[in-house]
Length: 380
Image (cartoon, rainbow, N blue to C red; front, side, top):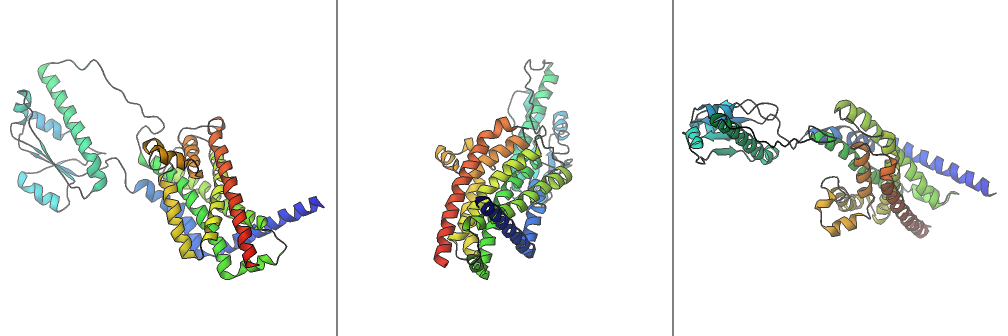
């Protein structure tokens, strides 16, 4: 008898889940959102606003005309900068006002003579700060380039030997510090959380608004079966979309190398989806309509994404925030996902994060189930 009930329960969960998939297939808005979130959104987030300089427009006003000023002008070249335009001082303001240049470097007269005399001549760097991403990082690049060129010129002019100490930097996992490598993978991790909450919550609210939730009350199904059906169906959609994005967008279009096992990452993502789909159902039961669910989603989703370590390292946050965010499944998912995809970590490294996700997911699921039973009881 128990075996018969178990088989019937499994069949109910399967059929209800298939019903959710058919409902999703007839919702063009959600289908467009899924495709966009795991394709265009990832590509744009990875390539739209790079942190490093790329083809920054620069012009140089060389009022010195010395070998040192020529050496400095020749040190700006692609891919960080476009080849510099040599302009006169009266062209500087016009060029920046028209947006032709992000940086204009003015080398004063007698610059080389003052450098050789041991004085500290001042150079003027004009920056178009409306180009935020380049303006913030360009100052440091230009200062480093000028200092390096002046030091090399002085050593060659005075016959000084090179410094006996040379610092050699080796960047692991992302040798060229490509932002796209980081941005694409973190966008997938964030989108898995966002879309799983949206799909599950929207599925429950859709049934409530269409009146089909009352139909379930007269069927021989339990609240547990209804919840499990929504969890596995919506979780499967997000998991397949994430796998496709990893293969076709990240590895294919963006050519980002993945260090670890994609299957292991998908396993961790499946555990995470168990937690986030349960969270989505709980939020949908708190909201009375889709607009209320959207407002609640903003309040919950932003802290989950911004404070979980995906945008800013957790070590840079206040200790209180770090401790509070340990209760969020996204914190452990981001940590495990970065370890797998960036550093090639295996199960022996990420098992604590997996255990934490399972524990948090269990708490969220039973909290949602309790709330769901109470909601159905009020509707009966």
